[in-house]
Length: 116
Length: 113
Image (cartoon, rainbow over the protein chains, first blue to last red):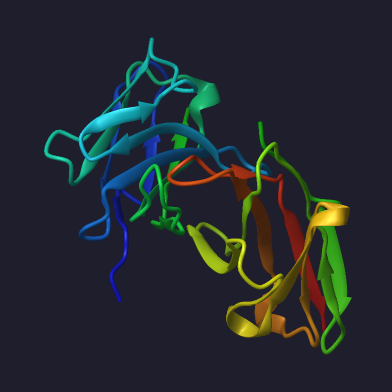
């Protein structure tokens, strides 16, 4: 069964350092999402791609976060500089969904970030 | 705007007892509704989804949920709890198409042997 791949699974970094996460969606899924899940809360969307274009990045802290999906396949989320409050689970999801049709989102295993 | 309220951040049931996890939604348009399960340090796995077809939706692992428009609810049930059901459960809503999911705050289910 096809799965969303994420790496690394766990990352510990010091405050003010740069960190990057990678996501490879299910083959053929045009829509890719990055969510952040703070401990004890539900995931919240950071950024959404349709192919290589950003559809929604309204909740992305653009002064320190960036995301790209250059060829419309895999994606990278970067934080620079990391802050203590960035400690969370970062989840990637992909979907066949388009603006007209809704399909379920499939989630990867996540990257657990700890900022010290 | 869409929102989801999950009543009860922690629910404990005995093994073999009925599981009932509550979810109420708010949506300005007919919603798509989902239940996801999350085990510790893992991603989210889809349990079931409502997409305007049958109001009673059956999912994996014996779970089902009923969409009640009049009550704006989408509660998750399972007739007989199993130890392996212990996890965090999230209800989520999206208005249509490829819009983002809006999640509730989750309900941690504990199974008592």
